Amino acid sequence: MALNLTFRQLKVFESAARHLSYTRAAEELHLSQPGVSMQIKQLEESVGLPLFEQIGKKMHLTTAGHEIYTYSQDIGHLLDEAEEVLQALKGVSRGRLSISVATTASHFTTRLLAAFSQRYDGVTISLDITNRESLKHQLENNLPDMVIMGQPPEGVDVQSETFMENPLVLIAPANHPLVKDQNIPLKRFEDELFVVRESGSGTRSAIQRFFDEHSVSFHTGIEMSSNEAIKQAVEAGLGLGIVSIHTLELELETARLVILNVEDFPIKRHWHIVQRSGKRLSPLAQTFKQFVLDEAAQFIRLP
Ligand code: PGA
Image (cartoon, rainbow, N blue to C red; front, side, top):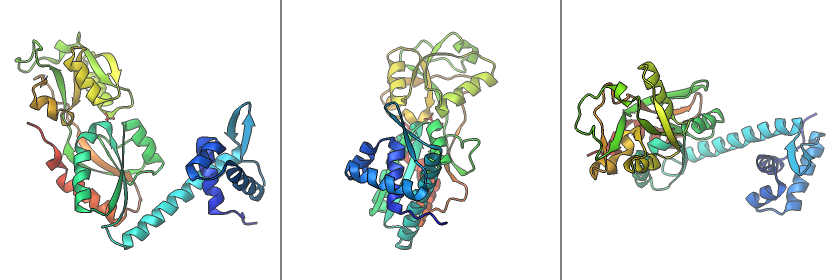
């Protein structure tokens, strides 16, 4: 027997399941709370099983609820895709683009997106800035059109292209005693403390891999989830730092931080533009991808 349900019920259910709250679903969808509960009740009737259960004060999804939740998300994504394809038929001058980038890439991607949206001014762009771990999760769930990150994730079926180098450099405050030294041995840093990005950051795992490969120990002090905070901490003398050179434009220009000349540095990395394999990119998304591949380097401004 075919399920007798409506898109509307699925949409309401998806929101309630995501928030685990009828009230928040009602707020999100601009409905009344009884409206939400009626849609879900009708959905439960057509499914023939309860979708939520209340344990103590907390709402949970039942097994059937989990199943329907997965399908309702997939259907939502398909509808978004259908909308994009239809938009595409109207040309690249309109439409929506959803891009997620690594925290470290945000320094040049904001400028890049500004230039792109000036060129295609009917386009709506949403940009999410987050770390590598969360980008992997987004790709697994096929959420953004495209991702800009340091290294394509393992264990997710993706298509990726390299478009620019992303060297990681060792930074120190401008008055550091090693500022004038050349080819400083890596071992010299075994007793130094580094201010580092959080685990889950691509920069952080690249640094760890580099020190492991060189069999040099690496001591981490405070962890911070922002490159900006790391640069300020290094400037304030809390430790040394290792960051992508693309985060340093202003500090190098104003000589507030210096790059130390260390053997085997910089750590060589590349930026990648990544999408789920088999994803049907709209002409707008394809145009954006080509723009990144051809023009990204112009948006780096190093002294
Ligand atoms: P991050 O990512 O901002 O998570 O460190 C950059 C990268 O993957 O290199």
